[in-house]
Amino acid sequence: MRKTTTKKKTPAATTTTTYQGSCHCGQIKFEVDGDLTGAMDCNCSICQRKGGLLWFVPRPQLRLLTPPEAMRSYTFNKHAIRHQFCPTCGMHPFGEGTDPKGNAMAAVNVRCLEGVDVYAIPVHHFDGRAV
Image (cartoon, rainbow, N blue to C red; front, side):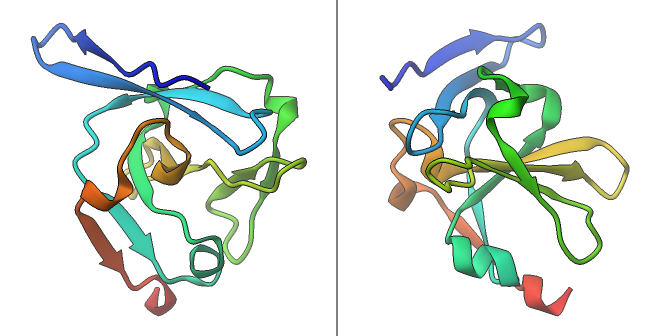
């Protein structure tokens, strides 16, 4: 997949970047709009194993470009987050849930975004094991 990051002007005259993302085999493809200013590294039982870096955005900012049937979901513990993954290559490109106010959110794995230098992004370490 080519990097096709574009800048969009929103009504408030701010600039937003559109990122292209996918799983490893390309069965799951998506776009996400926003300003990627940082990511979260969580040490909970699933994040520790997956090794992803998460960028949280309102769910409407993530657009799935492939049918939802192309992916599978995994939940555990309180079943609050739907960890989406590809049944072919096993990649976890994003998860879905709600924030504390009840707003639909997406947790995008920035390692699945095209053209993003993950080593240039500030990373916040979150102690998910303590939650």
